[in-house]
Length: 333
Image 1 (cartoon, one colour):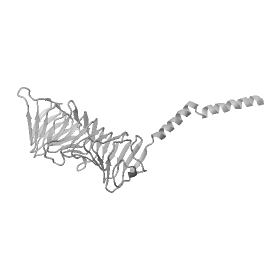
Image 2 (cartoon, helix red, strand yellow):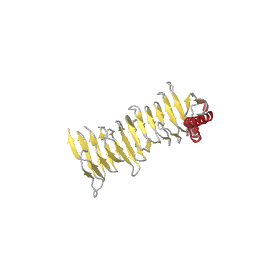
Image 3 (cartoon, rainbow, N blue to C red):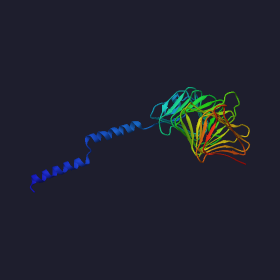
Image 4 (cartoon, helix red, strand yellow):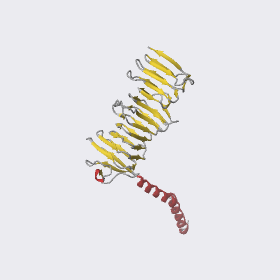
């Protein structure tokens, strides 16, 4: 091969190597754009460092000095000594992590904390609701959420891993409103845990269809009410339990256990239709009233059981009966 031919061959080889080792301009620009977008999306972390005053809105309470209140900002309330953080504004942030078991986040009245990340608010401390306060987004509770005496709300999926005396506590005479769509409860949700005996019942109220699953329980104390908006269905999973006293008047699909187990006060199921695919049980010395003009639909393995207690079935009408279709009625002990 002459010199000219060799030079032409070398030029073609170098061009071929450049084509295989250099990305086209459009791909390079796309990569740069993705890297820039990823950099902008990186979370900015703030840590609570405040003592007094305790307001969320004070920049010097945070390290670094600024207020977490943007979509790509996360906040951590850490340490191991008692701290109180007062949410006096309504921020939207990426994530809130309360790692300090001695810390309290006080949601002021009419304030909303909105989180956008999949783990939303993760709590190992205490959160206090207040009148018209809202948690919006995923709520993962390993500590305590207290509804202390007013109507407050949680809108979004809930995972509760904390059992009594922690968990989700609804003090009388307050109302905790849930917007669903599901609550994974492996701990306890306690309605009227402080045994309030005033004129108004203590509510766990569903604003949208909600599935309660997990292995935990809803404990209904005296003068409690588990209710829902018209047309809203409460579904209970197969390993979940609702027990205690008070009034369960939500439309119910029960795949688990509903148990009257308070010998001092009875548990009433009334007002709206019930579908039972699990068990409705009155324990020894306890009473369950099933009252209304609705139909109770049961699958073949479902039962209404008086286990040494009393199950009282009655219609509220002299014209329209209560109807039980399917399943079984059974007594023992």
